[in-house]
Amino acid sequence: MRKIKLLLALFLFSNLLSAQTENEITTFNKKLNQFYNVRDFCISNNGNEAYFTIQSPDGGISQIATLKKEGNKWLEPELLPFCDEFMYLEPFLTPNQNRLFFVSDRPLDGAIKQKKILIFGM
Image 1 (cartoon, rainbow, N blue to C red):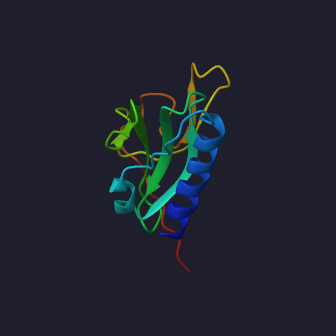
Image 2: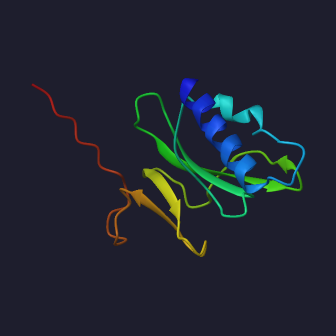
């Protein structure tokens, strides 16, 4: 919960800086509170799109979600369409906003169809 509050505070501050002529500040939708771990937050230059990683409490599931703003209202958060059983995290937009980069354990070639989990024990 503390991470979410910090992210929201950072977003509100950046929104305030980028929209100094606006009289009203809008906050994120409360739907973000449903995610246990929210990290790796980035926002578009115009402040209308945000990307972030959501994770399960143990970090075993890691997916990238997006929030989009229409007018002064934030829409519901959505997983990006390519998210599947592999991990996706640390999204960031290029300065020209044409590409979204991220980290993933998805195989580069199509040879491996299933995620392999290695468990180390003593």
